[in-house]
Length: 199
Image (cartoon, rainbow, N blue to C red):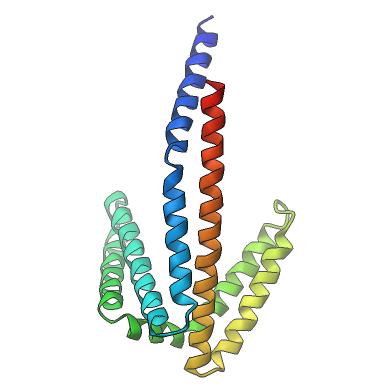
Protein backbone atom coordinates (compact mmCIF):
# COMPACT_ATOMS: atom_id res chain seq x y z
CA UNK A 1 0.00 0.00 0.00
CA UNK A 2 2.75 2.49 0.94
CA UNK A 3 4.63 1.62 -2.27
CA UNK A 4 1.56 2.51 -4.35
CA UNK A 5 1.24 5.84 -2.50
CA UNK A 6 4.95 6.67 -2.93
CA UNK A 7 4.80 5.74 -6.64
CA UNK A 8 1.77 8.03 -7.04
CA UNK A 9 3.53 10.88 -5.25
CA UNK A 10 6.68 10.39 -7.31
CA UNK A 11 4.71 10.36 -10.56
CA UNK A 12 2.81 13.49 -9.53
CA UNK A 13 6.05 15.23 -8.57
CA UNK A 14 7.60 14.23 -11.89
CA UNK A 15 4.66 15.59 -13.88
CA UNK A 16 4.74 18.84 -11.89
CA UNK A 17 8.45 19.18 -12.54
CA UNK A 18 7.96 18.49 -16.24
CA UNK A 19 5.21 21.10 -16.46
CA UNK A 20 7.49 23.64 -14.78
CA UNK A 21 10.29 22.88 -17.24
CA UNK A 22 8.01 22.96 -20.29
CA UNK A 23 6.76 26.36 -19.14
CA UNK A 24 10.22 27.69 -20.03
CA UNK A 25 9.89 26.74 -23.72
CA UNK A 26 10.28 30.38 -24.72
CA UNK A 27 13.95 30.34 -23.62
CA UNK A 28 14.72 27.97 -26.49
CA UNK A 29 12.83 30.30 -28.83
CA UNK A 30 14.82 33.35 -27.70
CA UNK A 31 18.17 31.56 -27.97
CA UNK A 32 17.19 30.16 -31.37
CA UNK A 33 16.40 33.65 -32.66
CA UNK A 34 19.70 34.90 -31.21
CA UNK A 35 21.59 32.15 -33.08
CA UNK A 36 19.80 33.11 -36.32
CA UNK A 37 20.82 36.76 -35.83
CA UNK A 38 24.43 35.64 -35.30
CA UNK A 39 24.21 33.54 -38.49
CA UNK A 40 22.89 36.56 -40.39
CA UNK A 41 25.74 38.75 -39.14
CA UNK A 42 28.44 36.18 -39.84
CA UNK A 43 27.25 35.09 -43.28
CA UNK A 44 27.35 38.68 -44.59
CA UNK A 45 31.15 38.27 -45.07
CA UNK A 46 32.10 41.79 -44.02
CA UNK A 47 33.89 43.46 -41.10
CA UNK A 48 30.89 42.81 -38.84
CA UNK A 49 31.31 39.09 -39.54
CA UNK A 50 34.92 39.17 -38.40
CA UNK A 51 34.03 41.11 -35.24
CA UNK A 52 31.15 38.76 -34.45
CA UNK A 53 33.34 35.66 -34.69
CA UNK A 54 35.99 37.34 -32.52
CA UNK A 55 33.36 38.13 -29.87
CA UNK A 56 31.96 34.58 -30.03
CA UNK A 57 35.49 33.30 -29.47
CA UNK A 58 35.70 35.57 -26.42
CA UNK A 59 32.46 34.10 -25.06
CA UNK A 60 33.82 30.58 -25.62
CA UNK A 61 36.96 31.49 -23.67
CA UNK A 62 34.92 32.95 -20.80
CA UNK A 63 32.73 29.83 -20.72
CA UNK A 64 35.85 27.67 -20.54
CA UNK A 65 37.20 29.91 -17.76
CA UNK A 66 34.01 29.44 -15.73
CA UNK A 67 34.30 25.69 -16.21
CA UNK A 68 37.92 25.73 -15.00
CA UNK A 69 37.04 27.91 -11.97
CA UNK A 70 34.33 25.39 -11.02
CA UNK A 71 36.83 22.53 -11.36
CA UNK A 72 39.29 24.52 -9.23
CA UNK A 73 36.64 24.85 -6.51
CA UNK A 74 35.70 21.15 -6.60
CA UNK A 75 38.98 19.32 -7.16
CA UNK A 76 41.46 18.71 -4.35
CA UNK A 77 45.10 17.85 -4.90
CA UNK A 78 47.92 18.83 -7.23
CA UNK A 79 45.82 19.41 -10.34
CA UNK A 80 43.85 22.15 -8.58
CA UNK A 81 46.50 24.79 -9.34
CA UNK A 82 46.57 23.73 -13.01
CA UNK A 83 42.82 24.46 -13.31
CA UNK A 84 43.29 27.90 -11.73
CA UNK A 85 46.13 28.79 -14.12
CA UNK A 86 44.11 27.53 -17.09
CA UNK A 87 41.07 29.56 -15.95
CA UNK A 88 43.20 32.72 -15.75
CA UNK A 89 44.62 32.07 -19.23
CA UNK A 90 41.06 31.66 -20.59
CA UNK A 91 39.97 34.90 -18.87
CA UNK A 92 42.94 36.73 -20.43
CA UNK A 93 42.07 35.24 -23.84
CA UNK A 94 38.42 36.26 -23.45
CA UNK A 95 39.36 39.83 -22.51
CA UNK A 96 41.72 40.01 -25.51
CA UNK A 97 38.93 38.82 -27.81
CA UNK A 98 36.55 41.49 -26.48
CA UNK A 99 39.16 44.26 -26.72
CA UNK A 100 40.41 43.29 -30.18
CA UNK A 101 37.94 40.91 -31.88
CA UNK A 102 39.45 41.35 -35.36
CA UNK A 103 42.94 40.37 -34.21
CA UNK A 104 41.47 37.38 -32.37
CA UNK A 105 39.68 36.33 -35.56
CA UNK A 106 42.84 36.48 -37.69
CA UNK A 107 44.81 34.56 -35.08
CA UNK A 108 42.10 31.90 -35.10
CA UNK A 109 42.37 31.83 -38.91
CA UNK A 110 46.11 31.26 -38.64
CA UNK A 111 45.62 28.06 -36.60
CA UNK A 112 42.47 26.84 -38.35
CA UNK A 113 44.24 24.05 -40.23
CA UNK A 114 45.68 22.59 -37.04
CA UNK A 115 42.32 22.82 -35.26
CA UNK A 116 40.53 21.03 -38.10
CA UNK A 117 43.17 18.29 -38.22
CA UNK A 118 42.87 17.72 -34.46
CA UNK A 119 39.05 17.75 -34.57
CA UNK A 120 38.98 15.38 -37.55
CA UNK A 121 41.37 12.93 -35.90
CA UNK A 122 39.34 13.03 -32.68
CA UNK A 123 36.09 12.48 -34.60
CA UNK A 124 37.57 9.47 -36.43
CA UNK A 125 38.79 7.89 -33.18
CA UNK A 126 35.40 8.41 -31.46
CA UNK A 127 33.55 6.97 -34.49
CA UNK A 128 35.72 3.86 -34.63
CA UNK A 129 35.54 3.29 -30.86
CA UNK A 130 31.73 3.67 -30.82
CA UNK A 131 31.23 1.14 -33.64
CA UNK A 132 29.83 -1.51 -31.30
CA UNK A 133 27.19 0.76 -29.74
CA UNK A 134 26.43 3.26 -32.50
CA UNK A 135 24.67 2.09 -35.66
CA UNK A 136 25.58 5.25 -37.56
CA UNK A 137 29.23 5.37 -36.47
CA UNK A 138 30.22 5.68 -40.12
CA UNK A 139 28.69 9.18 -40.25
CA UNK A 140 31.16 10.30 -37.59
CA UNK A 141 33.93 8.65 -39.59
CA UNK A 142 32.92 10.54 -42.75
CA UNK A 143 32.73 13.85 -40.85
CA UNK A 144 36.16 13.18 -39.33
CA UNK A 145 37.70 12.45 -42.73
CA UNK A 146 36.14 15.62 -44.20
CA UNK A 147 37.47 17.70 -41.28
CA UNK A 148 40.90 16.12 -41.72
CA UNK A 149 40.95 16.92 -45.46
CA UNK A 150 39.71 20.47 -44.80
CA UNK A 151 42.44 20.88 -42.20
CA UNK A 152 45.18 19.90 -44.64
CA UNK A 153 43.63 22.15 -47.32
CA UNK A 154 43.32 25.13 -44.94
CA UNK A 155 46.94 24.70 -43.80
CA UNK A 156 48.10 25.31 -47.38
CA UNK A 157 45.90 28.37 -48.04
CA UNK A 158 46.42 32.08 -47.41
CA UNK A 159 44.46 33.95 -44.76
CA UNK A 160 41.51 35.05 -46.98
CA UNK A 161 40.62 31.42 -47.77
CA UNK A 162 40.92 30.46 -44.10
CA UNK A 163 38.80 33.45 -43.10
CA UNK A 164 36.06 32.47 -45.56
CA UNK A 165 36.14 28.91 -44.23
CA UNK A 166 35.80 30.11 -40.61
CA UNK A 167 32.94 32.44 -41.53
CA UNK A 168 31.10 29.67 -43.37
CA UNK A 169 31.69 27.23 -40.55
CA UNK A 170 30.53 29.58 -37.78
CA UNK A 171 27.68 30.96 -39.87
CA UNK A 172 26.20 27.60 -40.78
CA UNK A 173 26.74 26.28 -37.25
CA UNK A 174 24.78 29.27 -35.91
CA UNK A 175 22.09 28.83 -38.56
CA UNK A 176 21.54 25.13 -37.83
CA UNK A 177 21.77 25.71 -34.08
CA UNK A 178 19.14 28.45 -34.31
CA UNK A 179 16.76 26.26 -36.31
CA UNK A 180 17.28 23.37 -33.87
CA UNK A 181 16.59 25.61 -30.84
CA UNK A 182 13.38 27.00 -32.37
CA UNK A 183 12.12 23.50 -33.26
CA UNK A 184 13.00 22.35 -29.73
CA UNK A 185 11.06 25.31 -28.28
CA UNK A 186 7.86 24.31 -30.07
CA UNK A 187 8.34 20.63 -29.22
CA UNK A 188 8.74 21.49 -25.52
CA UNK A 189 5.66 23.75 -25.72
CA UNK A 190 3.67 20.92 -27.31
CA UNK A 191 4.70 18.50 -24.52
CA UNK A 192 3.67 21.12 -21.96
CA UNK A 193 0.22 21.45 -23.52
CA UNK A 194 -0.20 17.65 -23.54
CA UNK A 195 0.77 17.47 -19.85
CA UNK A 196 -1.63 20.29 -18.98
CA UNK A 197 -4.47 18.58 -20.88
CA UNK A 198 -3.77 15.27 -19.15
CA UNK A 199 -3.89 16.76 -15.65
